[in-house]
Image (cartoon, rainbow, N blue to C red; front, side):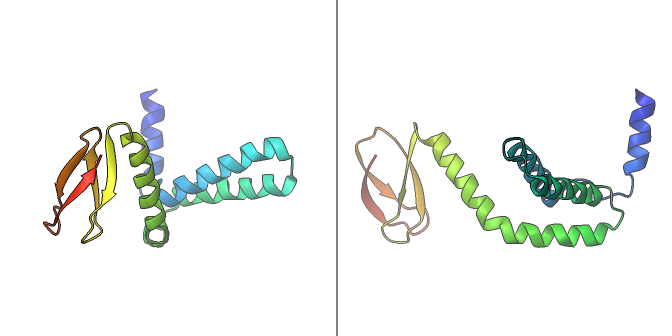
Length: 134
């Protein structure tokens, strides 16, 4: 077992490995494979296979700077969308305990504990005080 692990480590030395773009390509191809189970379309299967192949070629590539730049461009393009998804799932997770409101002065989003009725809130950014229902 140790021998296989060492061989794999030697093989991966100098290779790029997995990054955000490779991970997302793998997830997309997995989703297309699952969709293809229901649709049974050869074109869909071919697209999923090509995306998976591109993902693995990126992971095993030795062109580190080129893969790094591709990943950086992809991360910059999808950064806002990933932040919105993260905020959305955080709000769902926090729903039983916290309520989110916006400051009336600077429009900053604030998290308040639920069940406190009416409270006076001080915005940490602009120091404006206002009343809020929780």
